[in-house]
Length: 165
Image 1 (cartoon, rainbow, N blue to C red):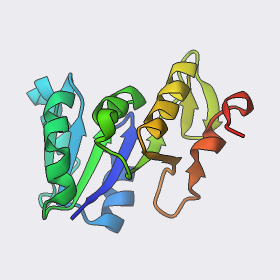
Image 2 (tube, rainbow, N blue to C red):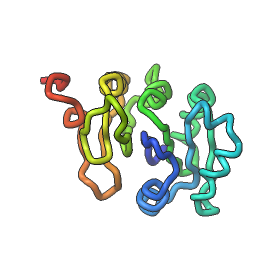
Image 3 (cartoon, rainbow, N blue to C red):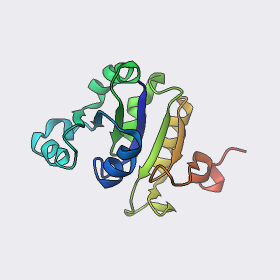
């Protein structure tokens, strides 16, 4: 079974992922790829509290996750892969590891230096460049907060001066 969803969402495991996407995709496992969280057992326990018992949570650093991507893509389990930021998803994708996959931008929220793109996506210039680099790795990048929402393409996420003509 392929990975059901690769998603960038600052909140990681939360209602939109568990209820919104989970009720549609029925995952067996959610993998959070985050170097710091992979080292923090108590934070992992907190995130796991939001999951129903039939969904396993796994927390891996980027290097470990890169070794498991092919297993997740071809294994029998239904998997959702989450990262907190675009840079981490790009690190996971480098070298073509996610070529042919779609990455969903699900929630990057307001902070200083970010511009509003969608009500749930705010981007800095470096994040825009990382999204372009992700696409250059053969990944289809789009944004959608929930499964029934309109799919927003990478071109729509970028300012006019960055859009390819």
